[in-house]
Image (cartoon, rainbow, N blue to C red; front, top):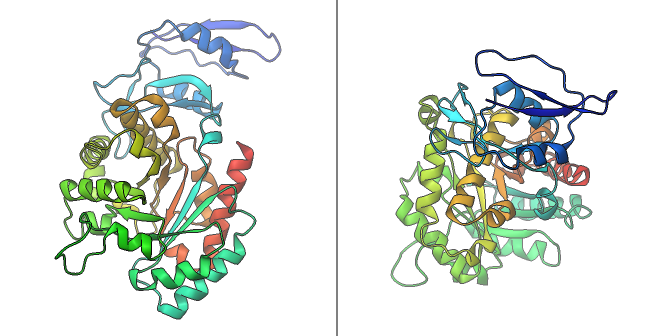
Amino acid sequence: IFELIHSSVGEQQRRVIHGNNRRRRNETVCRFRFKEVDEALSDLKCCWWPVHVLNLLQSCGSRFLMCERGRMGPIGGISVSRAGMSGMRYPVRLASAKGNEMARRMPCIGGNWKMNTCRDEAISLAAAVAAGVESSSKEVEIVLFPPAPWLTAVADVLKGSAIGVGAQDVSSHQEGAWTGQISAGMLLDAGCSHALVGHSERRHGLDETDTLLNAKVQGGLEAGLNVMLCIGETLAEREAGTTASIVESQLRADLAGISPEALAGLSIAYEPVWAIGTGRTAAPADAQAVHAVIRHVIAEMYDASIADAMRILYGGSMKSENASDLLSEPDIDGGLIGGASLHAEKFIPIVEAALATRAMD
């Protein structure tokens, strides 16, 4: 039912291990020869892998995708039981070792200040971040999302730097009688290059629907903004084991009608709602699994090249203590930072972690 080709460092020869999901031979794999693995598996249509083999593949640098039960990739997977991931399968993709896609995806670290700072604090914070990341900003894209009243002031501070300025929301309308809303054109005039859409505090706190969020994505991209679409599951959805179906549903609804060409201006932030502002963080492997689902859905909606180019950020309480572990995962391309972004001394180390991870790739 499954084949695993590996080489012994001493013998330098291939061996094939046969087994099934009831009887498994425990073997120590010293080193993978990815070319041989790819060649051996190139003709397989479905191959069931036990979890310990998947973990071994990942630890050796292989990339795998995960999708829902019944939605199989070219190479199949095994159903696993994990908090929030019950009923999931891990289809393995051995096309390339970790790093090849990341080399094309510049990491992005965003700082979402939410409804914090006064004007002077915003100016001081932006200046401190700019000074602290000057040497990193060519290798890591950095975007600050201050409150709307301070957008112009922060944009003035960052003028001439490589740091982008983003709005925390954007209207789905371009102009008209929409009291309190801010259009994409207005944001561009204020110095913005980016906008968040669908942040959980709006999606869930303000009951913004997927229909509305789709219109915001469409309008922002058409106007020339870079849109960061936020998606993610609640604690109840995670505990019910519906994480994958929730993020897939959000993606398909929020990107409905978005052309492949427009996706050059889109990035995605995965925000497990239960981790935002709580201090709780998804384990790196769990966060990676959901990011892989997202990339798999994008590949289904568009194609593999677009999926590989899509930057997917993690937005669930990333901080300096866990940034390196999270950013080392192959499908985590950066972070959307909340509380830590309000302190330059906490935010800058996250940017440095992204820079170090990119250097390793």
